Image (cartoon, rainbow, N blue to C red):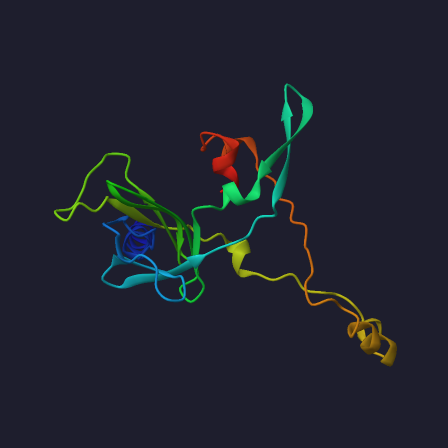
Amino acid sequence: TTMRLIVLVVLVTVPTKGLEQPMLVYPRLLEERSSDGRMLVHVHDDLTLSLRKASVAAPELKVLMAEDGRPVTRFYNGEHIERDLYEDEEKIATVTVRQSRSGVRMEGLVGPRHRIEPLSVSEKSEEGAVAHRIYEIEQKEMLDKTMRYRGKAQDIALNEGDLQARQLVPEEVTIEVFIVVDVAHYTKFRNTSLVLQ
């Protein structure tokens, strides 16, 4: 019984690390448009974002869905989807920003490990800023790993023909991105447009 007691004490005293408690913040617009088109938003004392308009969508987005077990294709206006999308490449932040009489509403990523969203209750600060919460994003183990390429050295060696072919690469390349959204994730949104944002 003495051994069991020691093990129990060790298990109780081992420190654990969970997710941070959400932080209550009141984002304020400091500068609506600077000379370079950026918007300056003070999120909290340690975070001010210098946001520029982001463009990530094609002019038209093709969405493939299943309704009643049948495939359905819908098209969405890419400019409409990204109309409120902004980014701060230095802080690794991408957020939607909406301004109204009630204040600034932000939703998205405010860094590689945190996300922000407005509170559904219209709590405001003394200055009239809308209350938001910043949540820590749970890091999954797979996000920190890279896949090893198992090619042989002779298979990837460059030759003169490869170098000449590289000179023909266009300056701008269009990349198709496919995103798969499962039902569990999709149900957290009111409609498909919000999923795409």
